[in-house]
Image (cartoon, rainbow, N blue to C red):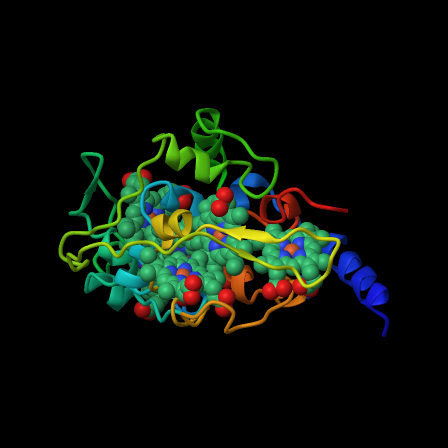
Length: 262
Ligand code: HEC
Ligand code: HEC
Ligand code: HEC
Ligand code: HEC
Ligand code: HEC
Ligand code: HEC
């Protein structure tokens, strides 16, 4: 296959809206980053659990949940049960009826003493479309800097301007550590001439992710050790582990390929 052919196929793949199997569906801004957790709920006669990233990432860093609390960065891969939540693990690390956020007690998660039809269970085990969440999103959104894709929010600007201040330390869960100095920004050369190189900012990424979210699992700590292509990124590997799911989507080509040549 000629190089030009390959590129044409790549572009078609990247730009075409595909369904289920292909996975590129453009979701509503408040649904971007939503994860449905459904390993055990149905068996227990409960509705599946709806977890919204936009609510949580405005309040906490990715690292806090994905390293300190230990949620997998893959839908359904964490073994969350009513019992783990009650022990104060996973959702129960915060949703325990004791921990506070902004002076307000965070509502509690799974319990045997409460009826399963209780409104408190339904905040997570949501049987219907969550219209409260959409309303809350609209209110939140009003104060935020915009970007066209994903949540429609420029998260980077929201953080650097101090509009949101995600917490990176949870009493009783996180271990106090001295922050590692972030590596210098570097550029990743695209392997075709007509796309511009990608400037990767360690500093900006480390704010949200610390170091351990990426190293060594997604990227070995050695520049140039891994070669990857746009095709792999688009399939959910490397940068695509986060971009297209929670961080801004792949369709936003120019945010990575700044000053595109084509
Ligand atoms: C309050 C905790 C929390 C925060 C903060 C958080 N996440 Fe998550 N994340 C989760 C949970 C829970 C899941 C689902 C895990 C499961 O189903 O096993 C998840 C899943 C994911 C997934 C997989 C989604 C999918 O569809 O497969 C990605 C990617 C991800 N998170 C990235 C991020 C990034 C990037 C940030 C920061 C901008 C972040 N998360 C912040 C809790 C969190
Ligand atoms: C690091 C702390 C933390 C963890 C871990 C956490 N949450 Fe939350 N969550 C919060 C806070 C703070 C709020 C907002 C408080 C409120 O509305 O009472 C919230 C709000 C919510 C809401 C209401 C807003 C919405 O999305 O509609 C739901 C539902 C929710 N969390 C589900 C979950 C689930 C499910 C998990 C585990 C998979 C989880 N949370 C893990 C801190 C956390
Ligand atoms: C903060 C979010 C949250 C709230 C509130 C919550 N749950 Fe859960 N619960 C979860 C998550 C996440 C799972 C795992 C879902 C899955 O994999 O299907 C779960 C799973 C369960 C399960 C099935 C797994 C098992 O261990 O048997 C039961 C039963 C359960 N919850 C009961 C309840 C009851 C009863 C309430 C109301 C008192 C409740 N939960 C409220 C998050 C929550
Ligand atoms: C969002 C993901 C991500 C985060 C978070 C991250 N890195 Fe990296 N890091 C990378 C990538 C991508 C490379 C280049 C890998 C390659 O080219 O194969 C890299 C390369 C490196 C290198 C080799 C650089 C060189 O010039 O040889 C070091 C050292 C490093 N990272 C340290 C850190 C430290 C320390 C932190 C936390 C402060 C951190 N990284 C956070 C993605 C990340
Ligand atoms: C662990 C998750 C994760 C991985 C892996 C990741 N990113 Fe990001 N990236 C983020 C988050 C979170 C933001 C903040 C903006 C947002 O959420 O939309 C971000 C922001 C950015 C930005 C805008 C900030 C800036 O530097 O101006 C660029 C560009 C970017 N990422 C490129 C990349 C590239 C290229 C890779 C792969 C080498 C990569 N990212 C891998 C999570 C990730
Ligand atoms: C999250 C950041 C990110 C986004 C968004 C992104 N790219 Fe890339 N892209 C990269 C990185 C990193 C490379 C370099 C891979 C390498 O060569 O090591 C790359 C490489 C490429 C290449 C070179 C050939 C190849 O397969 O490596 C093409 C063509 C390309 N991207 C096109 C696009 C198009 C078109 C879009 C929008 C639909 C896009 N990219 C969006 C990060 C991104």
